[in-house]
Image (cartoon, rainbow, N blue to C red):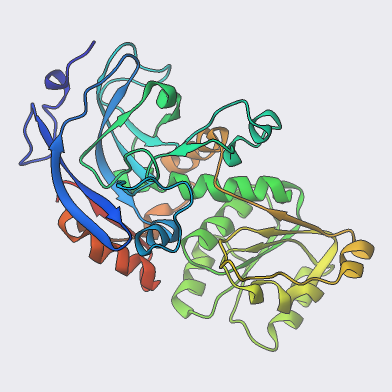
Length: 364
């Protein structure tokens, strides 16, 4: 077994090289988050210890904090399923391809491998899954113990900031959605919603060789960013948008990505879909959201409407080089990063939609 004291010499300023405690943001129940000092975790055979260097927040974290999402969450919990850190300790040999001191992103799901979803190749929707930030300690902690069963979830991401490495999780989610929707076969794509994930979708679509990518968003700043992420046409939603899209696509949109959880991310553009088009119901929606599409339109046009939930480990490995190489300009997606003591403020900011990917620095 390697020892923590051997590897924490490069810990952030102000931290001990041989700590016995750590600080983390513990969510005891909805709207009850407390910064606590707790003992360092004891490693068991096969475990790996990470020093968390960056944790990002998404809408799911906000919904858990506010109590709007509680399925699969075990209270008390430590939020943060988008995080990256440095390998500082292990009980036993490290996984292949991972070395002590490496910066790694963490695939957040621990799957059972035996349920119907896992057997059918949909391990990302494993019926018995556990996840960092739900049942397992997430990234709003100075250190995270990665249990032996999840040691293969560590994906090295060299050469970029920790926040950029952490954003691999939403990039992998977008990759999963585009793979399910057949984006690599598309000639034209429409991304509706240009928040961080919509922008990721635009960049990924271009990287997959889509000739024409359009993006729609009401906010001018986000439309400008969509252009930098590769969109060939950016539009404000409105009465004339569908006509412009039809002229742009010259035959219809092959893949439409609903990158915002609103039904009007699809309904105004149904007439723009090409024969054989796919619609990716990518974003999370409220429990009362119903998607109404004419059955005959689906039937006669051979449209595919496909969901997308979370991501897969192979997707992490597929997108990590895109982030590490700078092929996707994800640095532009990193918003305000606040200290751990201001985690509640960070969650509120993330929930406001007024910033890009808000995060927490556990060491600030």
